[in-house]
Image (tube, rainbow, N blue to C red):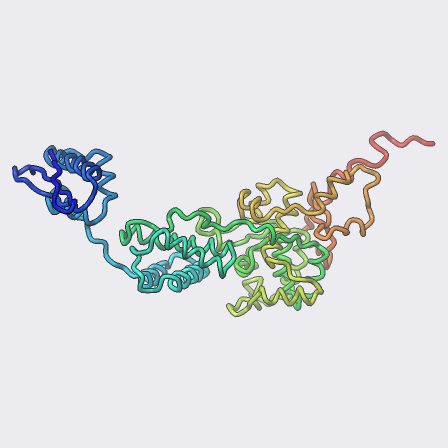
Length: 436
């Protein structure tokens, strides 16, 4: 039985008889009687467990894990608990350096992102700040400081990386809690304000402004193949192109760490084929890769594409390559089942819906002007009036040309597919036309 004794100055002391028959004190210092009584009840449970050799009750075990080091040390001094292992003091800077250096399993782009988050943490906390001294409140202040300088999605990525760093420290038992553990909003949100549908007319102008066959192929692979640029473009080999079956294998560095997703097979779409053929004709004997001139790490494709778009007399769209990829997925989704489209594009239906698929002016025009409506505008000017309209997507794809046939030199106005409901029913209906 544990009892409470009062010492001068309002200090409390718990006394109990240990298993060896000796009376032992636990000096609590100044605190309320109610709080001292709560501690005394847990001391009795600890003493019962020590005498019986049975596990602690869950309530006392949880309490023991939550108390501070000072009280825990007093309990250990009288033999009621084992001493806590002292948590080593590790500074933020050295830990982050060691963690990043040890992540040899990630790609160079991921390493760059880790370094970006490291710079932010060091700039805010300092390299010598002890990991254990960073609290959840400090983590909140870190996030607010980033929001003053960076965009919302960038802040989300950086805080996600910070959560990753401290989770690793927690697993190494360098800290007792992850200060970022409860932080919400550490994953990227879709920013639909930066959506842009690149029309075929715009694509035609950009292709005409491209300086050579390889740049035309880079653009066509993005706009008509839906490839990720530059990683999937640079991985393409001529051995991946199956001319006879009108298919090509796309190697995907982004998803290769997922089982069975190191590559995918897509059709050689009619719009894409001419640019493949041009590049094939220009390739030298024994050339391995489709893209050869722009493989250098110093080749900034984004900056070059901005110049090409400006040369075409257009304003660069918000996300140069991602908008091209999203445009193609939106087109294909109107002609094929979504699971097929996602298999070709290399993403999930959830990701497609959240980040890629768009509502275009064509969708509104098709809703307002049903296919069988004789009043529906048919002239080309009306069809291209909408700012973000795109040409001819619908039900059935065009038949792919035989491997030996050449497609038209420029497919900018060729549609992926003809809208089936436009050709099934004539304006005169299903009955034969009777003579007047």
